[in-house]
Length: 157
Image 1 (cartoon, rainbow, N blue to C red):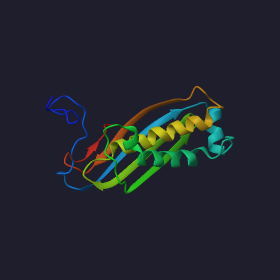
Image 2: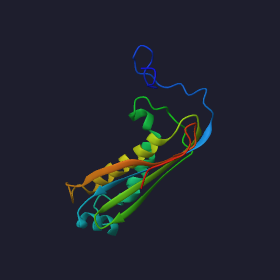
Image 3: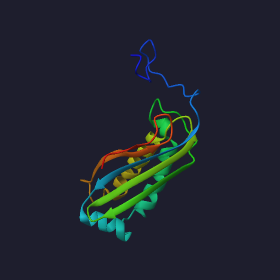
Image 4: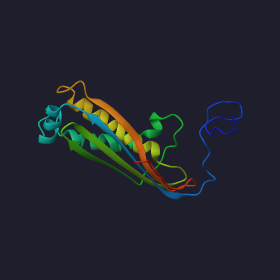
């Protein structure tokens, strides 16, 4: 079990001690998509969803979620994020969300970026579900990360 960073010598779960790691600027970018009917996508694009501006609310939800990642993922470190952005690309069959999280710290922000995307997409579902209960959320994944001991990483296209 010595290769598992979140397990101690007795096999119990533990938070990794990052105190000896160097503080570096780290960034992670994640993406995900919610597929929906053309009518629901058009209503979001035209601002006709009765609950309000779907993408504005989803952006705020994603940012708030990134800041709460340690409350949701048991062994994540609480991090003082430097920046979080959530952007959307809307087309006739859904919305793609992309979140970027940045920090100068001793551990990375991959989970924060993926949490931001996930909650932003769930918020879109919540706000538009009266129009399309069959929406599908998927393909949430890390696109890239920079900084830290392990260096830079990019997903294969």
